[in-house]
Image (cartoon, rainbow, N blue to C red; front, side, top):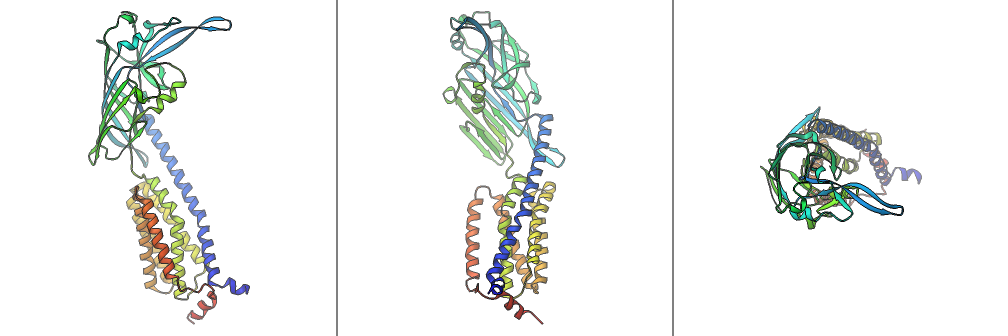
Length: 446
């Protein structure tokens, strides 16, 4: 009875299933290799960003006003010094991005140079709203700060026009919401703040270089931003999506509108750690997105690895049963290892020649290798060609799943349903209690 069990078709199927699961080990190694190569790419991107300019975050000019506040404690009155941040009433940002691709070794990433124009104004009423009996503002030590995420990316900055005068911005010691700044000192003690009747306008032009993304901060009561670039695959992210946008093969145009009512912070606040997260969470902007990058595509392909190995094993098993031949477990193991080499070859080639061409070359090599081995193993050139065609179809299906970002789940589900239906159809007459060993031996040529 035990001998019959070990020689049954059911036991053969269980053994094949065990070998398929064993293939998880090399597939896991491939996934680890993909992660390692992806990490190397990130290091390359960081190296480019350090030299060109990192992911940028830009805000409009804000006023930083030192102040002294008298605070009563249990031991008496003390004076504390801090900085008040005052936002403009209106901020308009208009920019055009000129993207390009920079390489570091075999790795590349999109970078850009942005030509930006900023203008707006500070409301006179916001100045008068500041102050209390216990607070003294040091208007003669005020600073106008412009938040720039990575100042290394500044290529050009025009003189800042503010309230009818021109100022040259320089390196800033302070920050705004943990974003580095360039700044200029202002003496706002004359005229007296109470005498300011009109809004104080500002304007500035800036050339800013960055890597992959440009983020904007809504640092005004009413913020408007318009960005455009000849990049066909933008990814709009952050707290606010564009109110209007156009995206086509030639590039994109996007227009944002953000009010103070949409933010989690007010027009002015005391600079402290509490507002750091509030500012960053209010940012918005655009990423120069690269659809399904090489490593993302390799990772997607690897996720279907076990499924395709199982399908190939099942195809071999069906031909084995129908032709009443014996295929040794070691031969199944060699086939499985051959299928896993596809993912290593795909990863190595895709870094050099791109994913599509690498996929074609790796799939063709594995299909020819497995089809030739099957023809010799099953003693039939026609059977080898049939298995090769089936494997080519499987790889074509896999490619469709990889490149179809929106419909990959639907395509995968329908393909899996069709495969299960085909398996049930072709195995509907298999007697799983048959003594597989005896049947194969009796049919073997002598």
